[in-house]
Image (cartoon, rainbow, N blue to C red; front, side, top):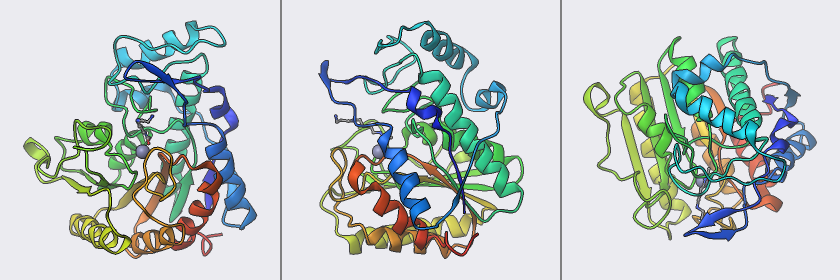
Length: 320
Ligand code: Q9C
Ligand code: ZN
């Protein structure tokens, strides 16, 4: 399995987030990605490849030009240790800008696009491994540790060549991804996540959000109770997989967040490390060309083990 990776992510290092206006530790750290990369390599599950550079116009397919330019100019204008919270183009106070934010976020999108390109060139499974994550980033706004919506950029690119399903298994609902494709019938968005009446992003992810206009029926949300068992989680996953099967896509974009893990410091749906094998396996059984897109997951010391199980379930070892 090809793992698309670049060290540029280390340039994005926010000092803190604001929780109800109070500074608190920023869990979306560089080690997350490094730990996953080392673990997958140690198990011989893949080889690292560097991304191609795509023109910025690829971002304009899902984000407004005003937003992209704002992010770029503001980020470049900052000094080395600034941790800046803009008053606009943002959904919440969980995505500060730093000097390296634009360059890292742009590289994340390059990694997602490079992975998508490899699916078009015949790869069955590719892991686009990057940070910052993307699924909370909307067409005009950053939020929830996300700046550019990498899954959406990749899905939009793939949608020119076939039908695309996005399966989002991050602990949090992917409000940005949902909104970007909400009125479209050629890209299906299916998400399993913690009940938004209890957990971030609070504003979306309810079961009655199913799409609008032509997109009606092409958004599917499975909000989950915080004390869900693995058995029930698996049943919900199977429902989500049936939705995808019925849609009969050519490509699967997998927004893979590992913050559903039992010991995740900000998420935690009680899922154990071995269970990620079962999740991966169930998804593999769809037999779709699959692009793994990194989203959340903050239990740094266990992320490597989780990623190994997940990729093994997805059949990553059969793929050179
Ligand atoms: N300090 C992703 O997983 N709320 N984003 C944190 C705890 C923000 C999560 C509250 C969660 C954002 C990509
Ligand atoms: Zn998350």
